[in-house]
Image 1: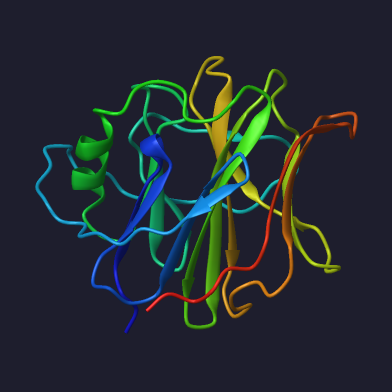
Image 2: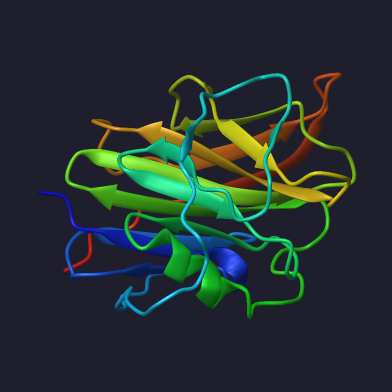
Length: 203
């Protein structure tokens, strides 16, 4: 049975409820691990989650606070409060959104990517945000010399200047080589990159 987890990205932190599995959060190439409880109450009315598949045609526009299924039972939601503010929750999505509403300010530099990795046994889930002058046409994740895998992308309506990405790598296990995330423009130009090394498994 999978442990339920929560990612609160407004402060570039990932929280893990129950103490099982490994969580990693990255911002501009800096990694840290955090464990915390993911409880509390919320007042956001629940909404039906929307399943989204990876695309190479740019981000899908979603409404604020709407839960989007991104694989392995996780739901991602984008918030208009602050900048690059989003959550990934395996349970109590409404509570996660309420907690994240208090986060403000820019969490990543202009024209850069943030990244997070959640592993649970052989399952890996990559998530993060982009903040770029040009909206990416696609974002890919590559581990070592493996192929570039297209990530799903989400963005709020209008021109927020940022959005999120995710890649469900169920069965792939924790990366054992350098992971590189790349955002591309419509003309194929590289807009931003982020790389991080393998990390030791948590307790």
